[in-house]
Length: 368
Image 1 (tube, rainbow, N blue to C red):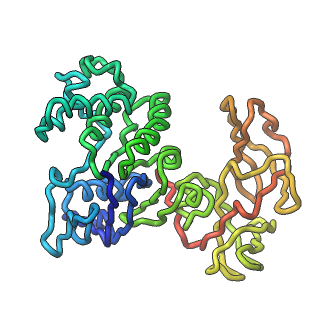
Image 2 (image 1 turned 45 degrees about the horizontal axis):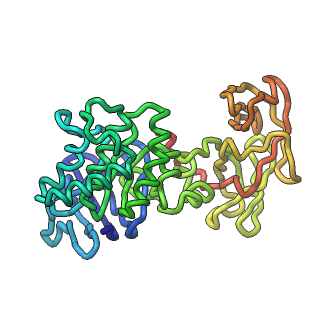
Image 3 (image 1 turned 90 degrees about the horizontal axis):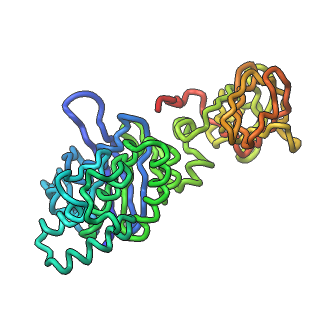
């Protein structure tokens, strides 16, 4: 039976340095998948390990359903084995001397589940992950993706109230990763288990999560739906980390509602979406996704001429480096042909709703 997870004012301090987790609060509804996304060292895995009971929080409260499983100030720390959670790690963590069925059945054997019930639950778990026909094979005879499915089945077979996944696809090759990524969401939703998924991969987060929590330096910067994270990033770091790699420096010279007129350092003027805090005269950094640049123009706002400085053909898409605004922007165009050769000029349109302005003193933190 899946249950709600509630994390309140979570803080974790190791012996040296800044807090690994710094006042993080969030809820995961029963049956919801929340993805924690961020670069290495941002605190996402430490948060997961605190929920699991593998790390002891310094402060804060963690509740699963009606049970408070961790509250250091009140002396509460429920051992991991009593929390009834499932975990899937980067490594497959399967027992190499066992068959697929024996691996999946092990948690039920440990719980002294009757044999008939064990067989039924193992059959159900293997069917869900698509491994029914492999049940009697030695687990070492499987591919990496299949072994990770075994690990997933083993974590689901005893019907945990919470499933925790720590970058489970990172050890797979690119093709397997894509295939299992698409299956993972279906499997988790089919079992209706509450899940937290940790990754540094934006594409994984968007595909898997009902909501995405972007973390940096131990803090939760934004927790929202994939659409909101993608279309209305809360700050420059969230925008940059989720793919808005282009930045244009300028100054606000006029604003009306949630839009404003920005003058770039090279003198061009463009309209962009601005937060209320950015008033006339404020220096601004505008973030823009490569796929938001419309090559060939179109429309009557933010039309400019750029020069193609370089292009990279990827088969189904082409990435262009465009010289404009005294610098370079990267543009991505779908299609199997290169439409604009290096050295040519091209009209570009920049939709104001997809140009997001942030205070110039914000840092993008472009490290991944």
